[in-house]
Each structure stands twice: as C-alpha cells, then as structure tokens.
Length: 94
Image 1 (cartoon, rainbow, N blue to C red):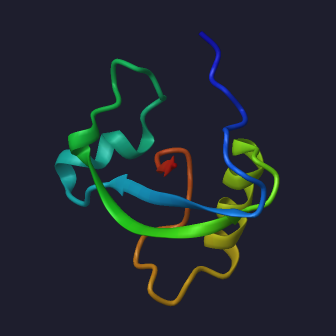
Image 2: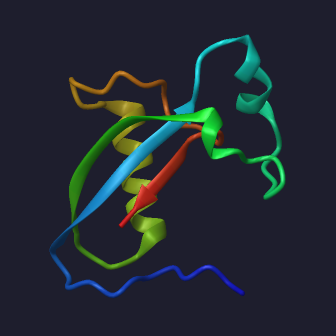
Image 3: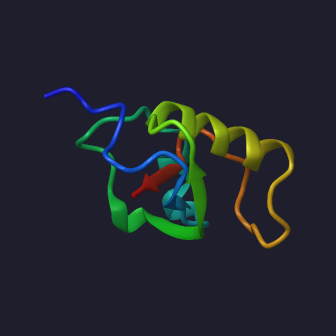
C-alpha cells in the first residue's frame, strides 16, 4: 500500500506536528545512524522534543516536511532544544 502524499483538511487550516529524536546515551547511539527499516524502528528509542501547529497551505505532506526541515535547520524556534533534523528524526503530522 502506497503512503498518501496529501490529506483531507481545508487549505489554510492549522495542522499539528511533533518531532521525535533518538534518545541520548550510548544505548541509542546506533539507532541514530542505522539504515531505516520497519524492523529496526522502535518507538521506545525516541523522545518527543517539540510539538506545535503549522498553517497548512497546500495539503501536501512532502511540502510540509520540507518546510519543517528548512525551518528547524536554518532558524529553529527559540524554545526548540533538539538536534538539527536528519534521517533519524521522526515527524508526526496530524
């Protein structure tokens, strides 16, 4: 089954998002650099580091993820305490 790239919300409505990063510590080090696979990803290895809302202008997941990636890697919010976004970061968009 293919992952949908759009979702059913009105244009210009607010969407919620959360950013999860691999927990700190030697136990989780390999998780940060592992190749993604359904068998390897374990949610208990992650902690929520930020959540907020964003105005949904075009109903496209890829566009939203690109916006978040750019925002958090160039000028992150002052209250953001996580690392820069990379492949080991999980973003939940609702």
